[in-house]
Image 1 (cartoon, rainbow, N blue to C red):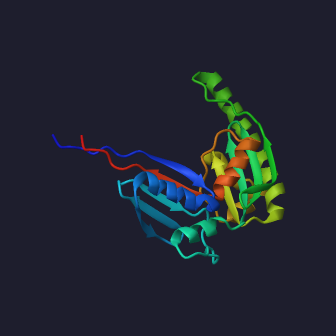
Image 2: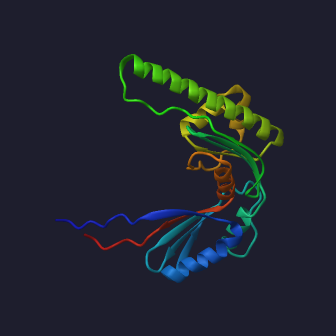
Image 3: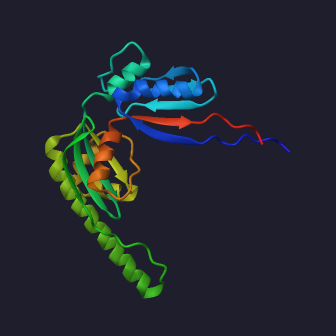
Length: 222
């Protein structure tokens, strides 16, 4: 029987630029000195024990690279730039829209509009539920699109950040009133729970932070 090495677990963290040096120090203290491999907006660390960490900038350089003598310093400085983002979070439980600069919200709106769950009933009942569910989703998307247009379009943010339900987000960008938002460069999609004011604040901070994916050292073959 051939031996098989289990896939090591990984996890993701969001670290503000000003805390990146401390995070790297703690990573090396736990896993040993790390070799670094770099790209323009990312840094991969491979530690002595085999654990690795992929550090990704929140946005592209766009002609404004970070400053510093090391890749880590430049990555931290790039993340520390106060760029503006329009954030739209949509799930069946509601919506949240915000304008953020440097990871802080400067304008926002959140609301709840329930979209019914799918039903296992058949026949006319299933069709009735499906129509009701579609109408509720349309109302949710229309409300969120209106707030997104009112808050974000006058501010002309540099980037758009979407999160939550991908299908609902696509539907929002198809709304005529919010269609111009689709022309903005999009940053990474965020996986968020039902949007609330607190979830939106967290999303604004995460969208402006360095995304770090840590993969544990490979385990013994089984």
